[in-house]
Image 1 (cartoon, rainbow, N blue to C red):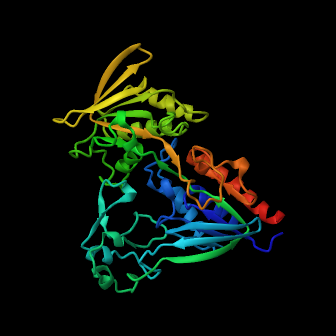
Image 2 (cartoon, rainbow, N blue to C red):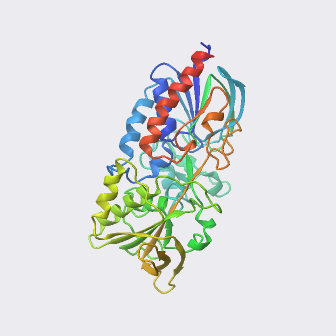
Length: 415
């Protein structure tokens, strides 16, 4: 066995967290590197999981409880891998950590945010609201520590530093570089939503009441920009007639050629959000094909049994906006009816595809033309897991992570 019994996990979403706790709890040292200021990835931004429709904080908090007391898990947030050298059992990895401007003395009292005069777009809510330049990433962030967005600060302002009585705000922090010696590497870099600005036929993201499915998650979330109320971005009106466009950028050679796998389930889930919130609401899902395999078929059946959730097979050709009402008109061919039709909704949700984040990960992992990791062509000692490999749901990501943790440990034993 190699002397170096440590594993580098790149990405602190649900897959990366799962790899880290599985490996650390059997005695391996894990360096968990995450470029955001918090762990949890895209899962932390969800309102609920399907099919049980329970909040993701439950699963995340269980894992955070496993991380907190474990000395074998080294969490590096606001960090990214910039260089990988070596081979199985003896990798040297260079990690760059960007300044948070808040140290471990932070108690999350919020005094820095109260004193801060500047604002910034809230990336956690996909820019739908704002926070102060001194902000807590989200309600149950891990680590539970504030961040200072210096790019939003006025020159010379030190209001946050002066307001902190614990000395936690350190505005002269600089980027730091660390070299880690590890035996194996796991890429759990996750995904990002496809850019609506690329979807010309679907409004290019220029219509206020055309939003993405990830934005819909935040609208429905109690911690979101509207406190969980599904309201139209243009005027704050209750959105009671909502359309969902499937494969918005997926399965299209001009955008993402792959199927993003979970979009059908996500839209069905969001139709339930709407129906649960407004008794008189109506949802229409415009789809090419429905993908609800295995146990998820029951989830689809439940939606089909609701007379206020309509499924229409047909590819949307165009959308337009009524400037006087803000309503959105969808033009499509209804394949099963054999007709062309228009449907008017108060808000339209685009099921934008899952684009992998593997590209640009220090060049250590082999990726396909689509950017997903090629599991069968990885270098020895280097593995990938979850959506880094292919579009999958949360349950599958966690299962895959457990297997990948075993592979990473086996690699070290064999080195």
